[in-house]
Length: 120
Image 1 (cartoon, rainbow, N blue to C red):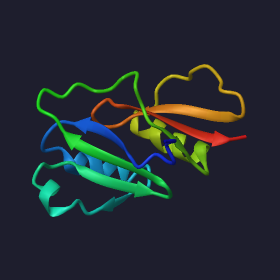
Image 2: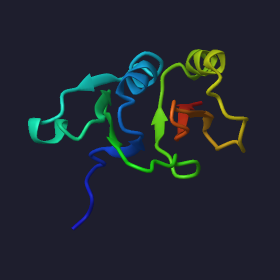
Image 3: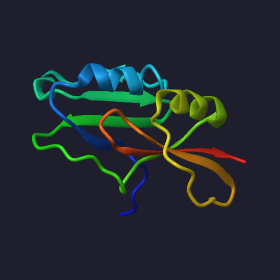
């Protein structure tokens, strides 16, 4: 049976840092927070959506950031978003080009790597 779509990507975060997550994912990247189901809300974390991209942040004791594994998010205005990330000091150094895309890597407040891409 073929996979038909990606439902969401889950990233980990330290417990109790939801406000930091909101500041970055909602305030900088432009996600909208989606209410978690009541039975999952007690675990902490956030669910986020922008366009067709859903990102779930789950809390993890002994958290370690994902520095290699990462979501790749398509954006409309990479330069403006990269400028905002640069101002906040969360832009990673440039990486190898990817044919057909302009791209940058950023770090969320917890050190997780996120790729931002815009089609050329």
